[in-house]
Image (tube, rainbow, N blue to C red; front, side, top):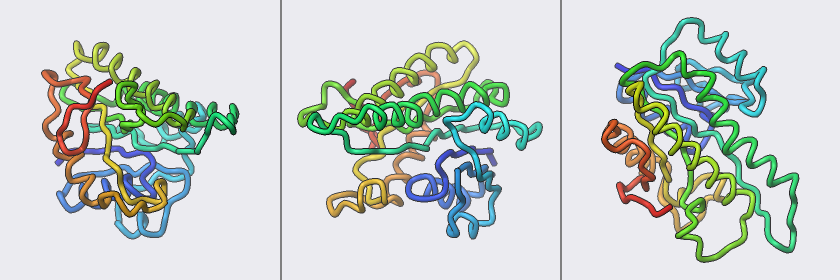
Amino acid sequence: MATYLITGANRGIGYEYCRQLKARGETMIAVCRTASEELQQLGIQVEAGIDITSEASVAELCDRLGDMSIDVLINNAGIIKRVTLDNLDFDSIREQFEVNALGALRVTHALLPRLKAGSKIVLMTSRMGSIADNTSGSSYGYRMSKVALSMAGKSLAHDLEPRGIPVAILHPGLVQTRMTNFTAGGITAEQSVKGLLDRIDQLTLENTGTFWHANGEVLPW
């Protein structure tokens, strides 16, 4: 049995991570700003009221955890706001950087003392953060913040390899969640997380820093 900490756990992919991991018999720490009813009904440890854009809030999370160690840290919390060239909202772009990129790095840095050789770090990025795969433009804040998150993941992979901690940079696929307005062309959160957990289970120091699709495809940068 391993201990997983998942941010953004109140709904969507984060909630589904918690649901499937509980079914596997793992120990979970579900971190979120506001706990949903469905998350509370799982009967797992929920740490609500945590804002990953706030150093003080992340420090509070560390205090709440006491001396708990973490085997797998899943940085899942994220936001998407549509920013086009005709509506270039710089405040929105900054907010997406704070949550999607800096928030994940802030949480990872704060929790590093709780990770050990053999622990794993997961960054939930997006194919929309692939420069090579950008064929449609727009979505400036989301695309740019996810590029930054992926770069942070690659640097973490190099910096943490000597400590025996591998890093996965994962794209969940196009998933039917509230974030995507339950797009008709997407896969279910259950299907996505099944693939994501396969990637996490197969993560080693030999493949650390890889940018994967949930289905196992290695994605272009």
